[in-house]
Length: 69
Image 1 (cartoon, rainbow, N blue to C red):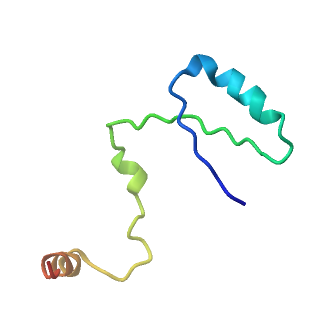
Image 2 (cartoon, helix red, strand yellow):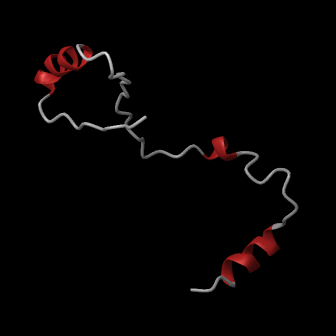
């Protein structure tokens, strides 16, 4: 299956375009709503990020500073 992403410049013509595309039986329409990314980061959503990993803060710092650049 091939996919094409269309960026609609004039939202007033979106309904016309959708009606036109629906006439084709070989095209499936999947609408994805634009999601705004908030600038606020919720630190608590990251809880458990390192759970189950056998690494401590010192080891993590060592690996971060010894990266080859």
